[in-house]
Length: 254
Length: 254
DNA sequence: CGTACCTTTGACGGCTGTCAAAGGAAGTGG
DNA sequence: CCACTTCCTTTGACAGCCGTCAAAGGTACG
Image (cartoon, rainbow over all chains, first blue to last red; front, top):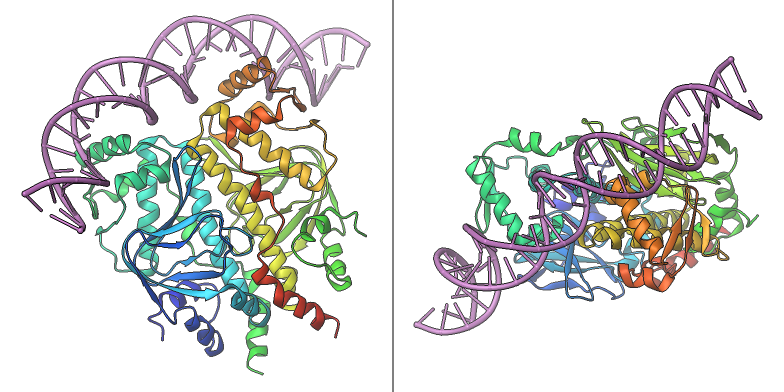
């Protein structure tokens, strides 16, 4: 039951009763296996599902008129994908797999039902969405005020913390299916400059990245370089919101 | 009744029945007048309210260890403020007034009740939150891929469209209580460079900004410079989500 | 084994930051 | 209402980070 990465994700925000667990398991029924580079949804299309990423990595991007690509999300196993777009009449981005993996769709109308019938789950989904937004916001801050070296350090720490959150025994060396190209598109730099920065960081024994792996050699230095703020990965929820949630738990069992 | 800017804002996303209107009016009861530069909330504090901005402009920012400031949100009349932070145990930003104005707080626990008792309002609030997020996302894309001139053009258009959304008869000249300093902090540039860009835009008859006003002289040129995408300001909602909402409208009247 | 893609490296240029100083506008107190 | 202070804007000189372009070497994949 609780080997579900989605439950591990959402259970941080509310108590998951048997009824909620049943709903959440629906989030992971009927997984679909996607190949690397397969598209989950396409920019401009009507959102018809939200998705949970069971295994593998994915990302979202926009293609501009001039052909340039801009990357927005990097999704890791356990992430809910598409919750930002689901109220919109058009997907703002295209979503594609970075590595082969399993994805579980949940129809949008089921989300509406969940909002109506399980308000504490609705609040949890909103809370999870707010956490995702906090990651984007933090990356915006990173790009607003840091130079290239600091941006890279900050981004590596973002990924490291997000992985560690659902995989507590993560080592300092781990799989990172992102090419220099992807990192450059996330951070608003060129792949050429990413190459230079990574080379310098390896020479300084801070980290070593190969095509599919990365090893953090000096975690403290990464923190120093990036002014990384770990507080945002707190799973606490605002205590003002918890009173009614317990009241509803009671209701649900009636 | 419907001179409420919050109702004008949220009514885009759902049908507002009399019961919903009653709740929404609570969003605007007991307005508090704030002076320029007054703080609405402070970074690190426990969020205890969400707020609707009835009049005046506000913004959120972070102060870094080195004293640098990073600006995240620019809030206009009618915006809901603090919905992103309300599930978190700490405010990620400080919120301050850019100009004198009226703000109406709504206690966080009331939001929880609304999530439980008015699920279609909950979905509307989530939809409104997603629209705010879309603005931030679009600004991230702007900063990722545009140079200084394009960033400024894009940002002016962002504000112009957001103002026009709640004030349909907005002229090409309007109040803009943002100093060059604020614009530079929003866009990750220096105030010196903003000064240079604005000077050039005025020389090219694109726009003219004074301390408190701005006049758009060549709207089409702004679009051309910025690759601005107007779609995101669509107020349509995903039709997959509307079925249950009408069902609930029915329920609420029982 | 060949092709396509990714990474590395160097040279060069430009956009934007930094620093500094002067002029202007707004706010404050007498 | 004026004087004073503080903050904002403008302008110039200069420097540096990072983008662009190009070519070579490395790696994955069919």
